[in-house]
Length: 16
Image 1 (cartoon, rainbow, N blue to C red):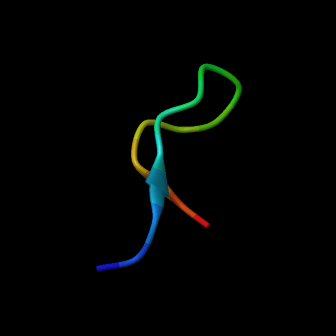
Image 2 (image 1 turned 90 degrees about the horizontal axis):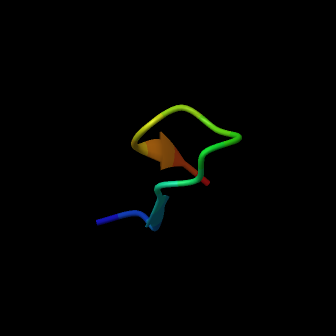
């Protein structure tokens, strides 16, 4: 599974 970051500046569930 790719790394997922839940950042307020990004969309919820943004794949990076």
